[in-house]
Image (cartoon, rainbow, N blue to C red):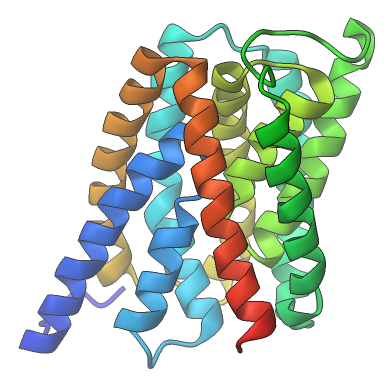
Length: 264
């Protein structure tokens, strides 16, 4: 950590914009995930001299406490199925570390066309299934719910460590579509699992010195404020609002990966 960090005028402006991006990212992420769509691209633009691992590591450190704030807010108002959280968190934590390790060995460009197809399928399925996530309707037996939670956590945890943006949205979709939780509960579960996945992937980035604390710490504060407001909004507005927000975030993910695949 650079204790004597004294930014120039341009660096100060970049910091202000980064903090504003973190504030908005925290708000979006707290509702249905996808805050990385805002925060990560902003950092690539504002800090072009940073390596990709440093961008990801700094971004991850700046956002994990905001996710923790959202998780705490949900736990006060939503009944959390802790067994599902436990199994999903263990799977996500282990696979997130592996994903982060894999990201240093293989380019994410290899997976982006597949991710784009996945996003299209998710968007179409959610749009046409109007009742998806409005009420809790389990699609598997109660005994198998933790197992499905483990599988969802492992899949999304690996994606979180390897690519990152949209992990929360994929977790929500997994718990809503595969298991049958409503959108509000699915979002609450995803926040707890996201915290676990972020912490485990952060071990790799911290160990290798990929976190710029002088940038990450003020962004963290702003992300926490955004998360507090976003989670409160989701709880007050309910499942219908969260579903619409989810479709908006998935649409943004489609644009992001479509651009990466076809125009880069």
